[in-house]
Amino acid sequence: MSKTVELWKKTILNSSASIQEAILNLSEGGMRIVLIVNDNNQLAGTVTDGDIRRGLLKGLSLASPIEEIIIKNPFVVTPDFSRDLVVELMTANNIQQIPIVDKKNKIIGLHLWNEITSKISRPNTMLIMAGGEGKRLSPYTEECPKPLLTVAGKPMLEHIINRGKNEGFNNFIISINYLGHMIQDYFGDGKKFRVKVKYIQEKIPLGTCGALSLLDPIPKEPLLVINGDIVTDISYGDLIDFHLRHNASATMAVRSHEWQHPFGVVQTDGVNIVGFEEKPVAISHINAGIYVIQPDALASLKNNKHCDMPTLFERLSAQDKITVAYPMHEPWLDVGQPKDLSTANENNK
Image (cartoon, rainbow, N blue to C red; front, side):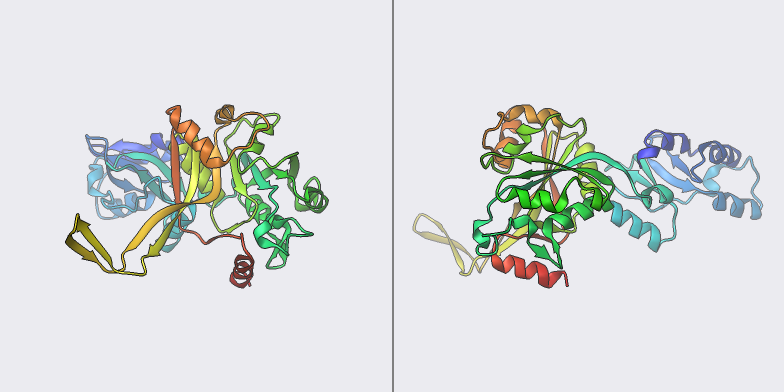
């Protein structure tokens, strides 16, 4: 909804308006929909050109109240709906516009079919952490850096770049250390992949976050950071949009992980048994290795010093900066061991 951030407000009419006012609104708004609100500024319904035509055919006049023709229970979405889900909803119900509402049913935006299905150019830089040795993947990584190991015939790193390119990202930085020359030889400046690729050379391993301290210049837009051994279908664009909606200093993609206790659990109070739970399931959120970082958050890093991403989040939280979790449900795999590499290839046949 980038182009409609302000324009959608012009489509709003009060429920006391007339059909003639709705026609004027449609003509001036140019979005082929009128958003009707009640006196509490909550969404009461929608009106399109088709609704007006059907009302006039039934004998209504231009002076008739708009309440005679509004669709009172329109399809709506909340800000947390991903772009793909919105497209699916619009496709399944053959609709061209869909309002975005908050928990109080107040309008906060508008999705348009032509806009949401068009390719968005993202100014954000994607930084891929590709400097690790990948010791757990030995012997595969003895002569090849882990991000260049192939999944479905292409290096994992190429999958990441291609997915980013398909979502409108054009600027990539790859942080390299172990066998980094092989990564540079493969991707070069990115021209053969129709993107721009630059490199950060870690002289010593700097962890999952320390390489960000070497950025020069510092990007002006939120920085997308991903580990180079992640195989996933996550929408990078949706992650950035989520980050911006929450005014976050840093956002971490997380996955729900379930673990079932192999035994029945006895609950006690001292020596007294107070309850039983048969093989309980514990649900937790794990770090998915994908982040969005505000440029000013990089001030919390020490130049060329080792730092892991959870440490940066802790530092930002201690400064009362907003750090949020982006719950992801898309397929995801951290390729850390030989069995993971086999799984990735099996899943991507």
